[in-house]
Image (tube, rainbow, N blue to C red; front, side, top):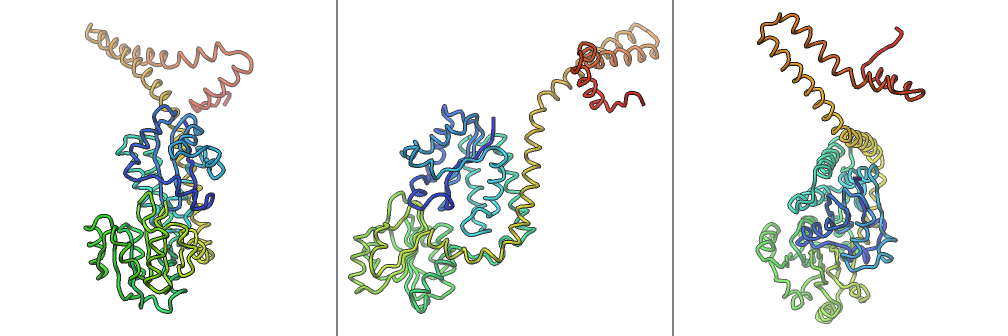
Length: 417
């Protein structure tokens, strides 16, 4: 059984492809069960974020998982495979360490991915698909990410997606503080964006969410108000900036809705930031003259400008990861010898018990204790030495030389000295 990782991310696939293979969080458990059913996959976890969808598996045949990913999302293998990457064993371990440390993120060093990987591990554990091997790998992954973040400057002066959204909005409006902002969703990304935008003291902040309790809790933090999702169409014209990030499988804001809002606004410009995968705002909205629509990929171009200052930290982080990959692979290799070690100890234990039982009978009979102990030690020595001696005597030619060298190494012998 081998470890491997496969998936697509912002490096290999455009947003239009990534959104087709995103997993609904509420269905991840069922998807994991489906993946393990008859696919030769023994253990599995799914990481699905705005910028990546990845499968981490312990399996005999990784190709089966790649085919399953396409089939699950009703895609032909030919459509998905050009964007897909597969990492076997060593590369899979390195990839997971790099992802958790933020080295493979669109925003280098961003901390959110570590929490998302922890959630992926919890979901797999709850689904019963996180076995001993993957469980150990996730534990080691989290430890490596913590070490990288605490001993390097990989997260220093980070430019986040939220900050990039504010930056893009400031290009359109002279002052973000004079604008009315609508946030659609109430998750972690919206919370981060709200914090960044509200630092500019906007004129008004509104949170629209499917669950009003979460919207009200977030709105209270930023002195805002709330909307139901079904009220967005009626109220969209009131807002200058719209930032959306939900888990909806279908767009929430359509072309017609925005066209009607622009008419009411008399074509005053609107900035719309879509951070969701799949997208919350129909792509066609970006063709409207008075709308400035930005997606995750657009924000990624902004944050790239901050990469140079963190390259030294990347070198340090990669060195840590290289060392920890070697350590984990050594642990994996040592597991392969466990059955042999257990069998060897069981054999020695049986020999010990046999000789002790025989000695106790002699002592009970009244034999001399010194002679009994001498016989016990000789008997135990003969039993433990029988197998290697017999193997050496039966070997011939080059095999005898190889066996002799191996026995000398095992017992730390130095013949001829």
